[in-house]
Amino acid sequence: MTARSAVALTIAGSDSGGGAGVQADLKTFAALGVHGASAVTALTAQNTRSVRAIHVAPPAIVRAQIDAVLDDFDIAAIKIGMLGRAEVVEAVADGLRVSWKLARPLASNSAKRPFVVYDPVMVASSGDALAGAGFVAAVRVRLLPLVDCLTPNLAEAAALLGEDVAAGEEDMAAQGRALLALGPSAVLMKGGHLAGDEAVDLLVTAEGVRRFAAPRLASQNLHGTGCTLSSAIAAHIALGADLAEAVAAAKEFVRAAIERGRDVKLGDGPGPLIPIPLGVRRD
Image (cartoon, rainbow, N blue to C red; front, side, top):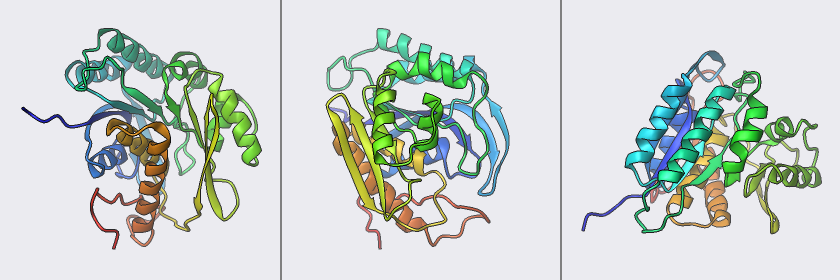
């Protein structure tokens, strides 16, 4: 019998510097032993210092990529990243809805649809805006009800809710619950920008709040951290983990990638993480 490999799809923008977006997602999938397919939503001209130009893909092309992949591959998990415009959000949402209605059984012979992880990228780590007018409204109405796990950082969560950025864990939990009410099945509130010796993330579900904490790592090379975390969650889900297990494993994967990349010089600005392939020693 022919063996089947776990397959995940990334729907995201391309980073010409190779540190974030589709490039980071595919590197993460490969490192974790998952085959990665992709639908590119935008081309960016960027490096470690800034984003110089953005060309958002026509919605019809984004939709065609999604249709082509989902029509042929047994996709176990989907990671969504930069979408750029409201029209692209709508194309992605429509593509997912249609594909699920027509879905063939997965390799496991279940009719379960792919698990969707959405990292709501709106601003690059350099500070450059990556989303246009009407974007937040489209995400709230069209996309969030289709999401299994939303992974916003504090600024993204605040933008989606129209509120101030959370100042502590209590605020994070409250905003996570508010986002949960908009449709996703779970919200992973990423607290990496909070002050303190620990990096704390909160997984908010209907069952409650679960805290994930680890000692903070000092590094200038953090470009693509959010992309890597969300794609690692998707990869672990594709490999059969439940959500809490996937979050814990993804956080450890990101931590190892930060450790490996913090002394590497790539470009003149903040560099990327260096993912460690499955089974490779860190030293």
